[in-house]
Image 1 (tube, one colour):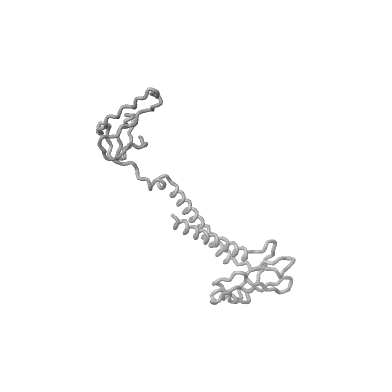
Image 2 (cartoon, rainbow, N blue to C red):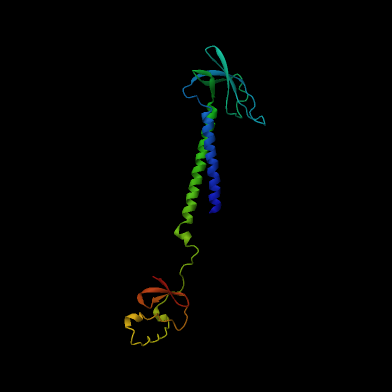
Length: 216
């Protein structure tokens, strides 16, 4: 159980990370709140990774005949040859220099991250709940306690010795003596369920040496 819970916790943590990254990617590739969207042109795709497999996009756009440039925030492994491609740019009307490249492909990639992360978190939660329920179930809790099994029989199968007479004492009443003890068997039969010497309508467990408190 412990291994399953640890594995589920690791999976859940990775899932949460995927969800957070998905939201970050989506936010950095969508239009600014209150922004204006215009068409721009990719003028460069500089490398954004140490291995050169990913790149960002530098997009040139014009607002009121004034040229501006903005660089995409998220580097991708696709579109590194998109120089000359038209892309949308979202900028703030009161500050045209503050802009963001609108890249639907990054938004779709971000949603894949979010869905994958959500599935991982859900699977991890189901695994943990299942493990806890199994660990706390009556079957599991009683797994270490051997059930009462053994031969069954009746009171006639046992040879009980005659109980000794109660002690004679003139100063003790019958009520103070209490009920006589259950007679031990003259022989030791194997453990099992036998008719209760005190109540013939029930069975009582004999453990091979003495009567126990278990009845049925």
